[in-house]
Image (cartoon, rainbow, N blue to C red; front, side):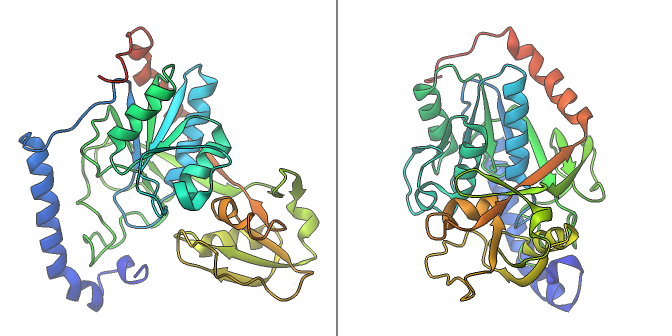
Length: 330
């Protein structure tokens, strides 16, 4: 559908009537929250929601990791809450760096490993927030990975992330990629491509691969040292072609470029028969792949965000520095 969603072609127009029904349901749900027939609950500490309005990957998780690291550097004690999309469980639980990714979700596992911040997952984000604050009472700010449409969680800041495709053809699902109409009010927009329409302040970000790959034991291997070896790249992410293109830009010779469904579990995946070939994957895939194929190497994605964005974030959070935090049960 990614190709269909880029333009307003025949398939998109054929699906457009269905998108009107979808849009009406979205508007009805938002209206029920606005009338307080459905209620939002606040976690008692500043809540930053990082999400998107398009289906598929927009780069939310790298943004969450960058935000958490920045907050930690500024002296905050951030925690992360998430639904844990694609996990096999449905309860509220903590995510540890060594948690099995299928049980808690690949993205929460990656966040926990990359930041060592407290991470909890639950279908209801407020339940995750309460459990996290009860287990880690020093937590003074929460970052919600995804959840822009999860209106049951009250938030203080909303950050909408766009990849280079922007809003695509501008249609709602299923005729286009939009989960809800855009523009919509948010505090800030982070965009990898052209700034989308809207009044929210926008900040550019650039994504690139690190110059090294990581082994399962944490050892770093320079990508330059792999340039003359056959490499089989796999990616179970929303935009695998971007990962493959970035690997080629680093000079790697891809003997294979295997795109798999987003959040793929790798249980039925078979490694290429050539044992000499180097297996390369994304960090998100590595949290599941390493338990099955420990020889795989993961290439981290580095995010370069306009410094003005972090300064704006610091200014917005400053008033909470002197405000006593409420209890986890608030």
